[in-house]
Amino acid sequence: MRLVPPGSSGKMPHFEKDLLRQPLLSMHMHVFSADPRVTAFISHGGLGSTTEIAHMGKPAIMVPLFADQTRNANMLARHGGALVLDKYDLANHPKVKEIIQRIISDESYATNAKLLADVLVNQPISAKNLMLLHAEFAARLVSS
Image (cartoon, rainbow, N blue to C red; front, side, top):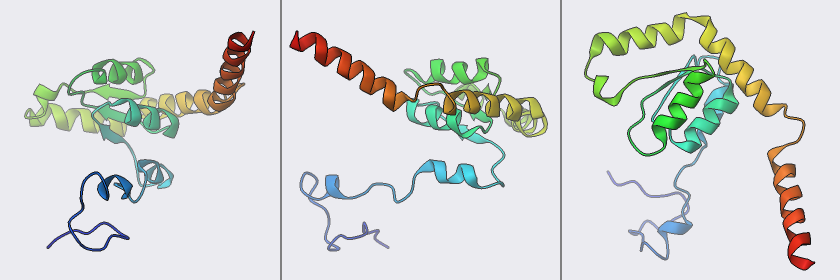
């Protein structure tokens, strides 16, 4: 079975011409946050997934692999909405089971995750407006 991106001709994509124009994901991860069946997320702790998890208000198990992921995972854990699992403990089934049970059964993780999301969503000035204010400020400095 061969997967063909939606809207493509069915031919193998020529990387520079076709692949970069094709949507790589047909849906965003955040659509799952509206599903009440989602109790917690498991993530590698990349900046994108960490930001989405923080805005969702759902607890998470973070398994950082490299680079900035450890810092991102620890940031969510510091706010009390996540647990960090070392990648070398993935083969330790009792530890993985214990962390999953803890994130599901201890309501403090869900409460803290919702609190962080509330703080992020209800800031007195949105990130977009703050960026625009800084851009306008920089433009005034350059033009003077």
